[in-house]
Image 1 (spheres, rainbow, N blue to C red):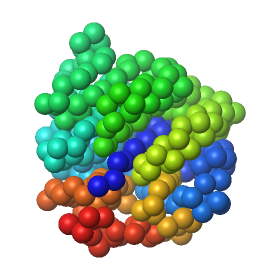
Image 2 (tube, rainbow, N blue to C red):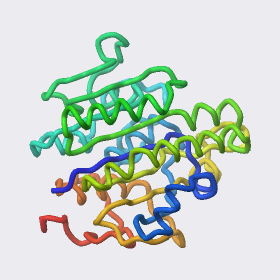
Image 3 (cartoon, rainbow, N blue to C red):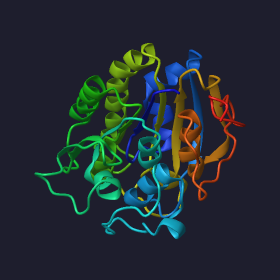
Image 4 (cartoon, helix red, strand yellow):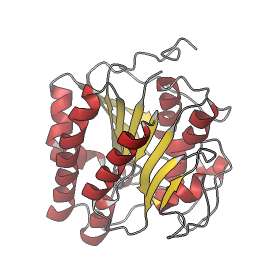
Length: 281
């Protein structure tokens, strides 16, 4: 069973990932990573797409149809499935993730840091300010990794999305924030790779030139997916879209977890276990 780190760079559109993130794309060129283009689900909004990424279900099924819907998910997430199998889960993430899978509504004092093996996210550090520095968030994640050795670690910085709303995706500030995130990844990914982690880097949605998302445009829906580790044949597989709904069942295969009845898996080019779990399950 592989240990997996899932990184969701909120608000990162595909074109900017490919043009501004030199280290991630170096890994592809150096045959150490696979790159894909993902078409996000609709609406291309944050809370609905967190639910898509972590449960593999669309808004029409899960009922998380807008950002203002504050309640626990009614679906089994990757956190639930991992915990039920006896794996350790952790997240350094925006507080909406806690509201979906641990407790809702979020209490800034009680829920800022959570450690409870009975919860789906057993160890969590959650922030509530959209301007919370990505550099701090990755340190939060590394602290969780060192202290609790999670089998599934979810990392979710907000910096790119926050800057995109303030300056639009067609701005030096947005491109600069993506470059900053890439430099942070260049600090942590070599360590995690050397320790044998399987790593997914993706985004929930993109950003348009109005500094918005939620609609159907390519800038809002096209996001990257990088697969790093022994389970992926390196290369650039961007001649066809990967459905965003397939990411959750992909992670289930990576962690040898059962998929839910609602999940639909589409084969991912270059992934070595399209037909079965790594353990043969």
